[in-house]
Length: 232
Image 1 (cartoon, rainbow, N blue to C red):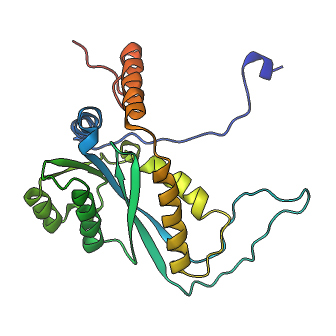
Image 2: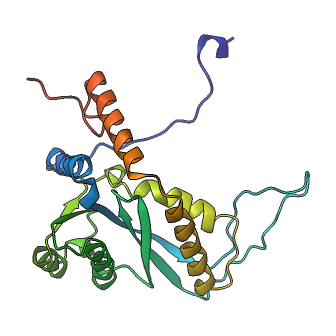
Image 3: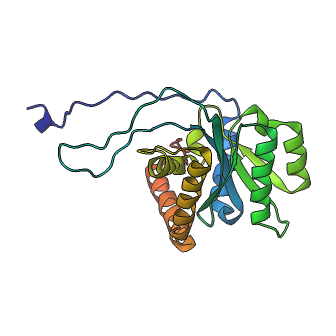
């Protein structure tokens, strides 16, 4: 009876409102880069830690005979971090893998982003507020190389477009896997990246999608990120 009235049994979800005093200014800057400079906008974030252990997932298997992975509690290989770099205009994803997060790995990844647009024109990089991302050496390098760092507001990781690509990355390379070491795991990650970039969406399709999303937001009276339009 309840289902007929449009009521179903559902899980409760939580959410956080960003307390960042510069929330709107940061979101406006990110939106401007995504909407008006997509060909020169990039996103960066770390994915991990990546350990060597059997990881459950899902796969096709004979009926009543599920695939099983032997569990282990030993961590003898250490961890790695996937430093992901995403080109918004080209819809391509690549990485720099390192043993830890920090200033040096972040700078190495940012240099690969700068090299993706070698003409020297300004570029924009969206990233979160990890302390290593705000180190003076990184800020100094960014100023010298015409790189504008666009930081997301606190509790607003959704504003970083690379976040949506970590789910498929996990599903196709980590889930239902038992890599023997980090070398094999890294090869699996890079194999997925090659396949994904070969099948990247056409830039004209991405531009059309952005225009359509902007039109829908305008009709609903909301700004990017679900914020209401400011009163005239």
